[in-house]
Length: 282
Image (tube, rainbow, N blue to C red; front, side, top):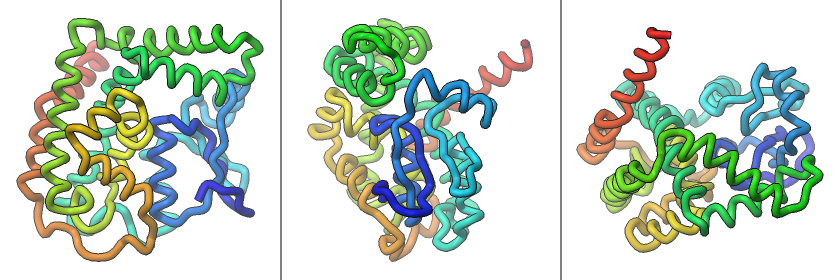
């Protein structure tokens, strides 16, 4: 539904962006018309800071001219505006699971997704070329220079510069392999994480999967060979709409979802606690 439509929202981001893809999956599921537009750097940075206080990807321009950012907060706002067929289940236990899984997908799987994109030459070549052409038009430099700048920026900011050095690679990739194994067991039994139709949990996990793991060369090969049912889920979610919201959700939190929560507790919860301690200690 990203084609031009009168009165459509403007979703400004990138066609290979983690969080842009998450918002697109949400808008498509809810039947909210939107127009995907590529951000242009560095020209939009100051505008974003002026109207939002921060410049990050994506941003949404509402039809009344207001601007929004932060996918979690935007989805909460749109759910209030479009309350039919909510993405958060009525059952409080399943709702809590959705919030946990969305947060985990947003904040933990971001680094492995960036690792696979920028650590390996195949991914870096693909992503740097795409982004140099799509969003770096405001930099009047040769293409090869923009590609080098993007590689340096992304690696310094999100992979080696964010703790994923050579000694961490095997652990990061083992973490992804464990996630894929868990998801395969889920999608052997049902089409979406919590049942017959998508919830916020699926929307959250579309972030790392739709525009990273199922797009970048190395993780896409992993999905094809080790997690084909998860790869099918990525496309099933993208092809979902309001008409897809049929059937039922699980009656209680099943063991396979509890397995995901235990995985989250092993790595992500200590990470959150360490962040809290760091903020407290200044």
